[in-house]
Image (cartoon, rainbow, N blue to C red; front, side, top):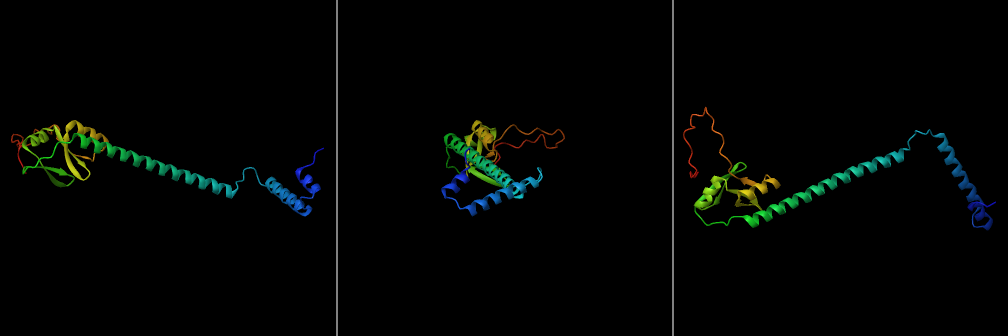
Length: 179
């Protein structure tokens, strides 16, 4: 018959008999306490540790989601910046200004007559890039709108429908009116 490790250590003199009895007593007390505890009883420390782990996992998931969202937003900004830089219409030095609304403010950008006509017709659009306004073709403006609707400032589309009850429907505002 083989001896247990504790018995072997006692015979070899490597283990103190008093410490061996004390360790056996502590082990026996744990078994008795575990037997007395009902099967459905929950260890409060284990429950607290599990709750803390779940809270940490939820926090980590939220932080990861925010990080991924931030990276996607940076990638969209980079795409918009690249689209604007490759397709923007060259700026002109002109005394003629095109006025447009950005939010609640009226802004202006220098244009020549051909650019004004194209802006009014909707073949050119105005986008915001790095705090500046740039003129880009309408198809590029639509691609920018897909990536970030706030970057597109002005793109004229079809004229609004005319209300039949409008008393001024016969008086059309000219497109070349500067305000």
